[in-house]
Image 1 (cartoon, one colour):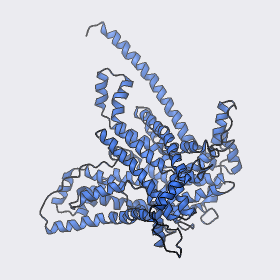
Image 2 (image 1 turned 90 degrees about the vertical axis):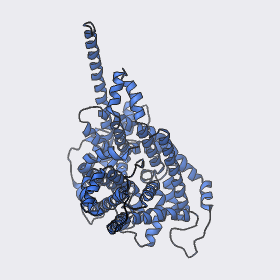
Image 3 (image 1 turned 180 degrees about the vertical axis):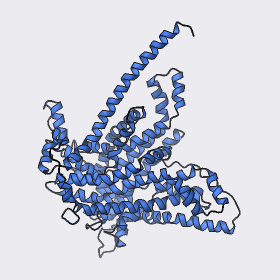
Length: 311
Length: 297
């Protein structure tokens, strides 16, 4: 969500009376659960992650005391080739998922915005994968990707008359990440579609009527009314998808474990591995700090873009 | 307008109509193709879950038999549905349902109360708290998970239901969604109730909450999907079956040399049903309020 701050309702300025004091206590009481929970489970671990990142904390407590190691973890991460591979891989993933997922979502939203029969039914159907657990999606796509006789390979073999050899979707380093892209786009695009539908509904009909009176054809109306009207939506969808892409984990953990040949290793998978397989929590925390900084930069970029578009 | 202009205008309307007709056909065809791409994997899952022979399931995959079952059987469901067997999916399913219900239930109360006070309260630090909450939204779950695991294991919370519920009840996003929803309601609602002497909690409870069905539905669906589909967190904080959710249980299929696809498929179908029910129940409000509040941009 964009979390644009709308103006809070005006606070009624009045002298503090006894009743107002009671009101104040009630308000604090209503706010307290959220504030306490957020502090314990979000703010504290967040601050801790910076501290842990600068120690040699292991997963299982050891007799030797935990040492402060400064930026050593970060230096080691930057020297680790696997880290750069994981960063490169999520960048590749992002590069593919943006056009595939957002493009499909945009196209579908444009179609469903028309007055087609059964469009509510379609909208519900297209959202189904988005509510499906990634684990279930992996069960389904794990069978679709079967090598060499899975459905995808059969279809490709049939369409090409047997000229294209079966593809080892998840086992070939050249294909594995692209396969993860297909599966991920299929799973998550329903959300983007709904966001686009919302954006389309936000464009006033009068603009289209005015364009029609001015003699604009369908393409011109799309280009000069729809696209400018969707600018904030595009920014929002692209940014959210990019952030999601950098957090890629579950499908990789289940289907490829980062392989083959580290071709699907991701930042979060690398973090979980260093933390829980190699038991280096300090090191893993340093990776999590880097992940946070990446997400922060993308989010700040979104703010700047939205400001430029004056919304 | 002269008489001469009328026939050309009619012709123009006619040609535009037929162009519109063929456009409509292209659109309908495109929608059907997309529907096929989206729905057929799910349909295949459903069909496969009704087949008894796990080798046959894979053999059928490459042909149209993937979409057809000659003698459907519920034996896969019976096998995984039993509560104490080796693959006690019934237990995991119940675990997940408990976690879902308590997370969403507590989340609706906690986040809506906070959103309400932030929108209508008279607290002096209100604006500051609101901006802090919004700022917290940037922190991804993945980047706090390492220290959080240490915290909860030190607190002895490993392998409990609480550890899968409590940390995710309060959320900047849902507080903000409620804030935004409440803030757009008319000021007169609050003022009139206040003049009548109603307390803040009472105004929230009896007037604003009943009006916030769209927001409640949206947050229920989003929180429900989030809780139901959690995977990374539960594998880190559960070691036994006691409180383990179904997503983790299904994922264990993948570690084995030969995957029991028949049972994996049946478990997956079972896993889809509750969240689908939640979605269908609240869908009407979900879409309208998602449209209204989430993407103001």
